[in-house]
Length: 151
View (cartoon, rainbow, N blue to C red):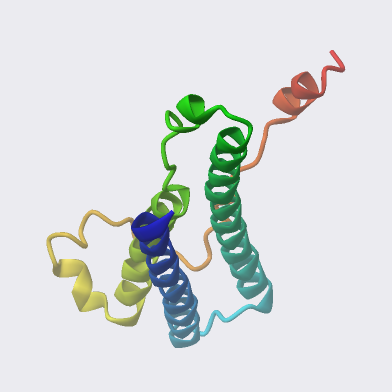
C-alpha cells in the first residue's frame, strides 16, 4: 500500500479542502445575492456527505484488496496474490471529486465577481442561477419498478 496509499490520503485531503471551500464560496455568493436558504445549505452538506461516503468506500476497496492479497498468500496462493494489482481507488475518486468541486468553486466565484466571467476558461461555465431547481439526479419510476423486479 505504501506510496500510492499515502498519495490517496493526500488527494483525499485536497478534495475535502476543496469541498469546504466550495461550501464557503457558495454561502458567500448566496449572501451577496440575498438568497441564503438553510434548506439549500443542508442539501449541499448532504451532497458533500455523499462524496465523503464514496471516498470511504474507496478506502475500503483498497484495504479489502490488500487483505485479500495477504490472505491468499497465507494459504499458499502467492502466485494468485501476486497477480492482483494495487487499486488506487481513493486517489481516483478524490481526483474526480476535486475537479467537480473546482467547477463549482469557479461558478461561485463568478457570482462573487462577475468580471471573472470574461476570462476565456470561465466562459465555458453555465451561468449560475441561485433560483434554479436542484440538479439532483433521480431514477425514473419505470426504471425503479423494473429494477425491483415487480413487472
